[in-house]
Image (cartoon, rainbow, N blue to C red; front, top):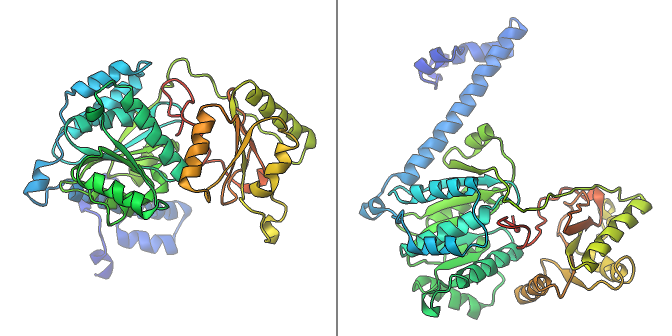
Length: 430
């Protein structure tokens, strides 16, 4: 019978979970004899969808971890003991939390085996995911492999690259033994790009940090051992796969996300990946205070800017984030302020006397880097940052980092980063 032929679940699974047959479910979902029967039919169909999804994810994991040839069979073996990692741990100005240590142990244990690691690292902003990833890369480099670190934006990738250089320099190794970090984005000049590609291909660069440019077809690693993806929810499955295809045998994969995903949902969405959680905040980290002001209330707006002004004049840093770079002619965005048009007004108004800088995605990489360095050196106390699309809805106030949104109606706040100094052991840039 046709309906029986469409049964895709193993009969023992149907029996174990007390499910309707597929034939019964299809009839009951359209012509239920009762509400209870309709719910039983729905449960069966939902169960089948999730079962097939999980099966597909497990098959994908199996395919990725099954050697296709003798090279794959050898795998990317990372030694479980690393003198360079021990040295890096000693040089840290703080101790890892128990949660960080546990997760780092899971990662190193995973990389010691032949099948490529596929792990999703979750943790709130400031829990210290980035330093765990850096220490994992140190371990990989000590075993003679290269690393790739992919971030969704040039600014974030630049922050990671500079943070890695500073950290590796702090290890006190001779200059010729200090791992080299290279930075790559799609907007680089041809000569710069060619130089970076050559250093990756000949192995003189140990870590390549960049944006989507890392998955370009012309990038060839000499010996890629670990691919780290920051804010992995902003990348697709195919993009992650392309990064893993940059080496034979396939490199280990560590994806990071600060987006809170319940464990059951994470297992559904990322079933091919092992899950690790950092659930502790490093000691000494100041609590984050969030205050929402009404954009249309002039008193609230002035209070927000007064707070920002007070904190920046104390030597702290802040942001004013606008949803648009330029003013829009669209009726939908007519009342939304843009950063280009508002920059001078704010400089001469609410933030008069406060050194300001203008930062957005259309600036050249070198200009962005200069502004980032000036900000970290506190030559600029406040940076006016804006987004290309309307996606910032609230004004956020931190004890030591203030942010004021130009338009509260414009959306969410997912892309704001406090910078590399946001707490002892914390991610900062997460």
